[in-house]
Amino acid sequence: MIWARPLARADSAASLWIRSSLTPEGVGLVRSGLESHALVTGLTEPTRELLAELVGAAWAGGAGDAAVIRYSRLAVENWFGRLGLSELGVALSRLLLCEHAPAVTRLGPHKFEWGRRTRVMGIVNVTPDSFSDGGEHADTASAIAHGFALLDAGADVIDVGGESTRPGAPPVSEDEELRRVLPVIEGLRAKHPEVVLSIDTRKAGVARAAIRAGALLVNDVSGLRDDAMLEVVASTGVCACATHMLGTPPTMQHEPRYDDVGSEILDSLELSLRRAEARGIARDRLWVDPGIGFGKTAEHNLFLLRRAGDLRLLGAPVLIGVSRKAFLGGLLGGKPPAERGIASAAAAAALAVEGTVDIVRAHDVTQTRDALAVADAIRLARNGGARFGS
Image (tube, rainbow, N blue to C red; front, side):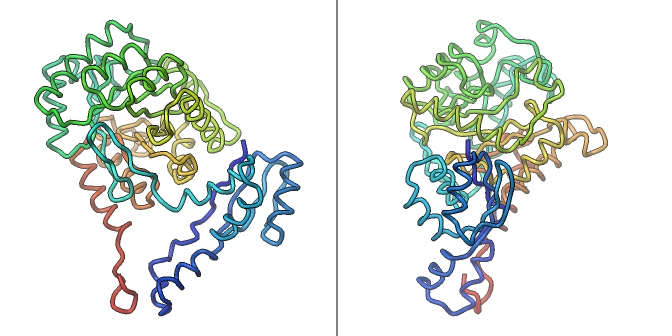
């Protein structure tokens, strides 16, 4: 696939343009012409020649299947007008998706307006072998109590899972997974009918039963690869999140390799979204997750976090889970999962400041919400004083 990935933001200093005393219309006109650079990959010889001819003096260089170009909002609109819905035209037009958060998502009666603040998905692992909490909430009563505690701490979504997906984890039967998660979902829904519940599963049968019990989102770490799972999502009208995973939990950390981790994950997630759309699931019901730790080295994880803004090219809300992951332990000199809460919140805050994530998955909801409150406030700050406007 062809991807055009921004190398810098054209409007990073937009809040200062008011200093020029231009009218709002003038500021918009100037911003539409501001140039940034983009890396275009996946080019064939014909598309490379077409791109070079199209952009003219905006060609900055490159070789093989890649090129660097200069672009502005106005230029992209003009290029798309000439190329239309060709692969290259769509790739270039998606550069404009990186400038804003995706459209509103409706989860049952709830409306999630992205971009106003970064939301939090609280984790309830109903498993005896979770990497992070060691089965602390493996029984129904403690799992329900933990879900209530996460809601009180400010979680926007509660994600209930009954099968560990840590590296090397063995599979769990459908019957056992249902035995673990259904009573928890039913218990949370009974006391808090308004709660937004997510089911963390790779099994279509578990997803269907969980939706009947009240789940509004299917969080599928296998990337919605199963046709039966797509049928469940399509027929029930719920939302779904496609996660990138290289291989399966038992094999995913066996020397993961990529030629270009960013474009390969974009390829995989885009294919997941297209398969879902082909089954009648609109893209505004779909989320994406790059799968931090799911078939990635520590360096892969860090690179993906640094380039998380590229996921905006997919036009879907971005969910990222870094909470207590092993690569954070490595950065902290080997600290165990329970001592990675501050590092997890710091990673979430770094993403929020950049505006590259819409919802983070967290064990430590209180710490994460506090960190996000500060990060979102910094990102949304507009008042530069009387000379700059607000």
